[in-house]
Image (cartoon, rainbow, N blue to C red; front, top):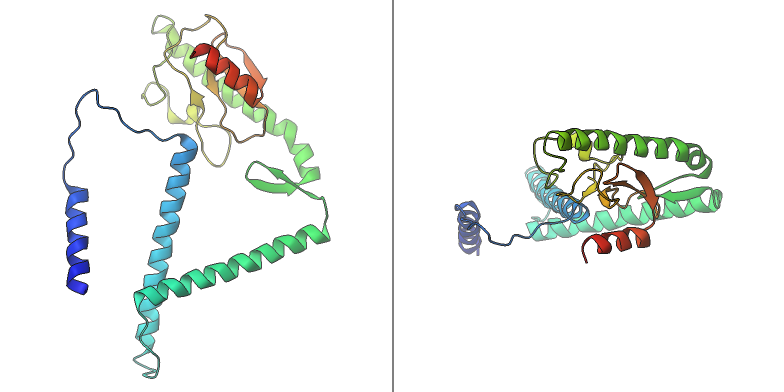
Length: 230
């Protein structure tokens, strides 16, 4: 079996490393920011999982030199051992979370993807909203500066080098980017130009082409987007 596995590995490596050709105008599949981050997280987790299993296998089999009675551990069994330990740790963490909630009922409130104490959440709401507005205000300044030098038009997309990457990122540790609708004209109408990612609850801040920063819920955002793209 080993020669077959080795041949398959070499074949797949050669296919992955071969040069690819793209024809102009071909459609390409682009992932959203949330999907891209999830794929990156899952890929990193799987890589760490497989490397951990390989390390467990090497350590266990190296111990057989000093303890000959130990059975040889295959890689498949090492993967099973790592998976079992992962499930046990997940069970322990779930029990700790349940005990925390029982000892302090109602004290924790979900905020984004994490939980925080309610008192701390209330104190940080105004600070967080201020940071969100300041971040959109910086992006507004960068976009309007760009538009002044391009006959009032905004960038076609958010991937160009004219505006640094830091302006496109929302004030969140995840580093997610604003949802940008490019190709519009400054100070004409009041359509969504940049929208916060879905990180701060139902009320999300928008930057409009009029320069106004406004808060809308998901239904209002969808309605405004559909009006722009019927």
